[in-house]
Image (cartoon, rainbow, N blue to C red):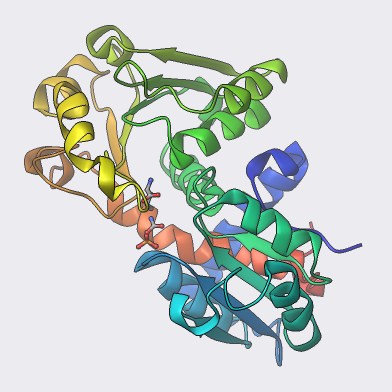
Length: 309
Ligand code: CP
Ligand code: NVA
């Protein structure tokens, strides 16, 4: 039966660790000069309803490095759900390509693509989740710190797709995760309660910046206004202004705390330039690791013999 990756909650613990280990292997072996042409002749369709730098380049480059090919479909090309129903797009693509990757506005579109395709579907960001980013972030942290479950990971910002995927990662891998946000921006209560119901990890939500970030090992942030929320930008700027990650925030965290951001970043909004450009920032490591992690995801979903774990 085909598998999809719509969010981290769909993975078993062994599968999540298997993907992180495969990412590490792909990264190491590529640096040693090995190539991994495991998907010769395979094609990935990439549906984008929103802009992208990292996701588009890492999926396309990753597919090329695996010996396959990627087809980039812009919002104007297929007009998902407008020119024809999402289910027809999924059924047609399934006749031509081996895998579908989609970045959509509503998560329902990704679910519909998955339900109506016979090939694996990967969520490359929806309004609800961003699993590839958070899995790549877990991989990045696992490279730099010995034991993920001993880290206090604090996300300062919106209860958005990024923090939802972190909640699911915390529930699956038993992580200590806190969302620090302005009142009213705590995120989807269903995602939070389902993650907490897993009984693993520790998932906290607070509006108190000083208390929430005290002693943190990782401070993570993201834009205040996600793609598709542009109409709310002014209101959000006012609500989030007290939550900017600054030197003071980092000083309140544990000594040597790491700074993370999925990017794109707005210096002077969610983070000061001195923090994101400072020595504890690992944003480019995160960005690089999108490539290795997504190669692992594609090879695993397409059941490449060499990617078995
Ligand atoms: N972090 C991330 O997904 O970046 P892009 O929006 O540039 O793809
Ligand atoms: N929350 C952001 C993440 C961008 C990678 C957005 O959805 O725009």
